[in-house]
Amino acid sequence: MEGPGRFAMERCMPPEELVQQNWKRRDLPGFMGRAGPLWTRREGDAWAYAILADEAHLNPAGVVHGGALLTLLDHAISSVAWEACGRLPCLTLQLDTHFIGPVRAGQLAQARAQVVRRTGTLVFMQGDVSVDGRTALAAQALMKVVRTPRGDAP
Image (cartoon, rainbow, N blue to C red):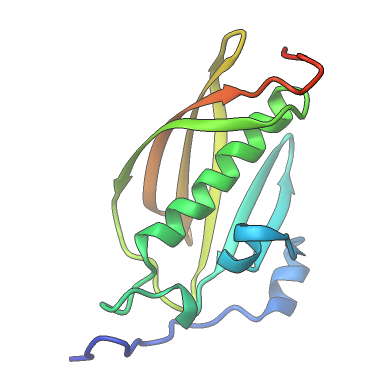
């Protein structure tokens, strides 16, 4: 049995393979830049967001930390809401999550999100994180559209 701090690498998908599958690496500033690197891919009218899990994403039990998966999913949900609201910033008011299965080092954790309903300043969302088609985390979120300094809101 492996102890804390030790992990078994799954088959690691090399970045070149991600590029061949139309994933693009995004080196973002701030917290998301530290949580990644983030990979994105357009899928029809939607976007997918991913992290290639490595040792830096693991908890002491040797699987990807739930906070890392939440960060990825919150970013995906926020980005989809932002686009749906005419690129106005959206804040997460509520994020209800259900952890379903582990993500391991070497695996590509992919997040996707959809708008369920939108009102004047609220966006109801759902999303998930999956690995190889297997759901690891499912969530529902409530987002608030932030008014800009000019007072714009959708």
